[in-house]
Image 1 (tube, rainbow, N blue to C red):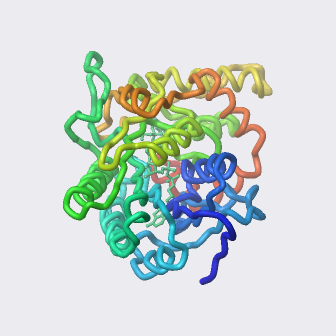
Image 2: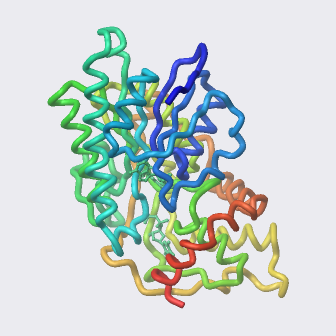
Length: 361
Ligand code: NAD
Ligand code: TYD
């Protein structure tokens, strides 16, 4: 395999045909001159349409493959000598992890182990200056900390891990592996733990794009339990900017919590989305989209509240989100309205099978 990035340094980014990874590629190419090798397995969640606007960009090359394929990863590292690896690749949906945890163990734990080993082999042979400058950045979630009650302080980096779902347990395990590869082998790692993201290119199995999609299709808007569970929402581009700051200036071996300080109950999120849709794309019968809200059986082991204390990344790296929930959610709804072909492309075939498995009918 020959990939040329003439005159550019290179980073290897995994899982960047997915939601956050593809947004990261767009943000990176818009603000940094380094090339990107994008390694993605293209599971149901990976979508090359997320990258179609940069098809002609010579600084981005897509390679289909698994982070657990040590031969492939080793060859990519050897051939292209990246100065950093950012690991977004994961199975990421809690409900799917409840139906079928095995893929989560396979990619999130075993896959992370394999890529750590491939990267360690590459890094250990670099000349001293390049070795010191190299970074492995592992992208993780706030869900590793478990759940908060209403009056608990938000998650700080010092909170003990207490994952409750197969997804969060597998991410917690991957974070521990990354930590151990630093402490044991000296690999220069960074870990970021972020709250719930929303924005363009999010697969409509997650709450916000699901609600937009179902609302427009005249379908029920399924709210688990009483809808009072709280998440701390962050616009995806703010997350991407935070990852760039962590890569650039984060202290090796440290973890950084990233969040939007936007704690909202699920029902309020759904009502906000419905209100924006009422304004931008009113229902033909003149009624409100919120009338489509339907309370359904709760998710087993549903975490009640997540909230992030982002003071460390603000203090040390000067990062702050640029979007409030009000501005970010309006942009997001507008993006889904402006991109019906993208939505159509991801909601056929396998997506329909998922809908009937999870929601019935
Ligand atoms: P996503 O499911 O949209 O994308 C995951 C991508 O990884 C897909 O493109 C998929 O094809 C790819 N992938 C899966 N298994 C792979 C493998 N074995 N090898 C190579 N590629 C593989 O997920 P996302 O929402 O973009 O999340 C990206 C990362 O950010 C994940 O690690 C997730 O845990 C973390 N995270 C997500 C959120 C969120 O709100 N979505 C919040 C915090 C952290
Ligand atoms: P989700 O987008 O799956 O993210 P996570 O589980 O990682 O937080 O869900 C966000 C919240 O919305 C979560 O509390 C579960 C809830 N939810 C619903 O009420 N209905 C749904 O159909 C979905 C997908 C999620």
